[in-house]
Each structure stands twice: as structure tokens, then as C-alpha cells.
Length: 269
Length: 110
Ligand SMILES: Nc1ncnc2c1ncn2[C@@H]1O[C@H](COP(=O)(O)OP(=O)(O)O)[C@@H](O)[C@H]1O
Ligand SMILES: [Mg+2]
Image (cartoon, rainbow over all chains, first blue to last red; front, side):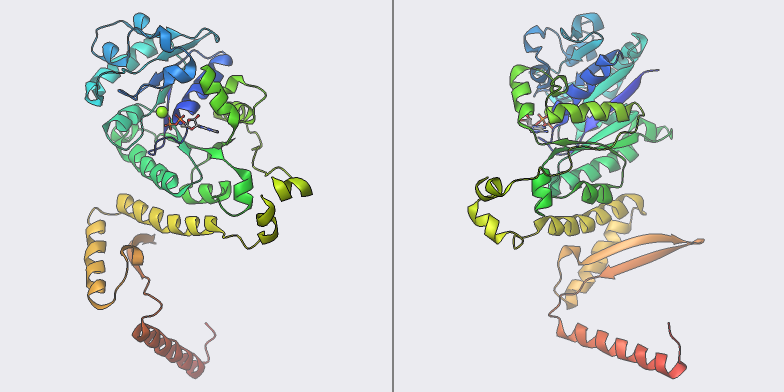
């Protein structure tokens, strides 16, 4: 059975693409045949984070318009077995996608025995974002500890509950996961940033993980490598934990505590 | 935490609390708008307009909610009036005093 997971948020720049790349890579690393689709038509990004930008020949719009075959369009990852990237178009605009066209692509992917389809949503709550979440079985709602991000996440939850395929067909609802990213425990401790508890309280959906704000995310995206492949980094480890939870394991949450500072670093840090 | 912050520590503004309070109001609004009957947002706007005829309040001063209690729907209105509205304060004080008096008369403890 193929599972379709959308990574969504409403707000831009919260870490959807970073998350899509790491979640897809993590699932493939555990042996699941996985494809990650960039739905951000016109503003393609995922190929850069995955480090395959020079291998893009065809894109999602070509595939939807039946100008290329699935095999021609999918890019096979060079590092991880079982991992494929379906890039967005850089030139066309968002109207190039239709639900019927995407339905055909989803059907082809299911017939090719993919275990997971990860959909990297564009920002906003317009057509592009709705298209990305339409076929989802599960949703990773990516949220930063910040007012506008939390509000937008709540709006996206409303759309998942009323405009997804599952809601339209009266099937079981889309399974919602909260992923808090760019978390800064020190600022939370100082009372300057919403805490994990605050956000869980407000959004009232199950917590999949907490990804700390971490310099390694930028280093990795500079290098075109999903941060989950960096075992040393806190963000990488946090994504790895999130994969375990996604697969049903229960794991305590890490990286929520501010590092203890000595007297001198408190003074001059 | 820098040199000066160290000594100020504790007095820094706890803005996260503010953020949470504001979000609680916002999200409650968003959720009633999408789960309640579809006339609810308009009903809220109309009631808000009436309130604004008499008291100057902001757009988030009114929350409208539909709750299920047993087998009937309860429409709950919550109006936050500004603190400097003297007449309102007065009215609520009167109401409180009356309630107290009534309690003492009947000897009820509720
Ligand atoms: N945990 C993190 N720590 C530090 N920077 C991050 C983290 N997650 C994302 N970023 C950075 O935030 C920016 C936006 O991330 P991106 O994944 O492109 O967001 P979106 O797809 O939601 O627009 C990027 O520059 C990325 O490197
Ligand atoms: Mg993105």
C-alpha cells in the first residue's frame, strides 16, 4: 500500500522543503521505496536541497501533460537506494497543474510500487498548496514557534479537514502530525519564544518531532545534502527520531532543553 | 546572554506569553468559523457592529461559539469590553452586589 504524505504549513520559509528532503531520505534509508515531489511550480527548490539540480531533464508539469514518461522524469538519488525525486517546473506557472493530471501521476506511482509519496507543498493556502495536500493520507504540518506560522498552520488544518480528497469522499480523515522546526530552546527558556507545550496546546494535534534551529541545516543545503544524512547534527538526529515516530515507534522528544551555560558564557555569550 | 542582559535577567519581557494569548483568541475564531454553521461569521460581524454603536471595541472583542450541551446547541457570546468603560464597570458592580444580596437572603452558598 502506498502512503502519501504532504509536508505543508501555509507560511513560507518555515522548513517544508528541508523537511520533505529529510523525511523522504530517512524513509528510503530504512528500505522503503520513496519518491519526493516538488509541488512548488515556478519556484523549484527541492532539487537544490537534494543536490540533483544538474540532473533535471523533465519535471512534474511535463509528466502531468504527458510530455514525458514516469521513468524519464524521476531522478534516482545517487546516495540512497530506493529514493527518487520528482522536480517542479522552473518556468511554468502554478495553473499548469490540475487535480486530474496529478491523479494520473499518483496512479502511476502507485503502480510502480512506491511505499511513500512525499509531497513538498508550496507556501500559501491557494491552489498550489491545495493541490499538494489533496491526495494526502497523512500531513506533516511544519510550524515555527512564531505567531504567524502557528496561525497559518491552523488554517492549513482547516483545509486538510475540508478540502482534501479524504474529506471530500468522506473517508477517514487525513492523519495530522505536528512538526515544530527552527526551535530555539534558549529563547523559549527566556520567555521570548512559544514553547512546544504552547504550540501543542494551541494546535491540538499529535507531536511528531521538534527540529532545533541548527547551523548544519544551512551547511547541508549548501552542499545539496539532506540534513538527516548528517548524523552529527542535532537537526539530523531530530529528523531521524521523527522517522521512527512516523513508523509507529514511540521515542522521547530531544533537543527541547536549553544548553546549560557557565557563568562566563552567560556574561559574555 | 550578553554582559548587560545578565544583570537584567528576569526583567526581560516575556513576549511568548503575549503570543500565546493572542493566538488563543485567533485560533478560537478560526475554528468556530469553520466548524460552526456558515452564518456564524456574519452573525458575529452583525453583533459586533451593534456593540460598536455603543462602545468602542476592537474586532477581536467578541467571540461567538456554538457548544453542544446534551441535545441542544448553546450559542455562547463573549464580549470583552475595554477597561476604561466606566458605565460598564458600574453596571457589573451593581450586578455583583445584587447577586451577593440575593445569596445572603436565601443563604445559598453557590
Ligand atoms: N532547523 C533549521 N535550522 C536552521 N535553519 C533552517 C532549519 N530549517 C530550515 N532552515 C532554513 O530556513 C530556510 C527556509 O527553509 P525551507 O525548507 O526552504 O522552507 P520552506 O520550504 O517552508 O519555504 C532555509 O534557508 C533553510 O536552510
Ligand atoms: Mg519550499
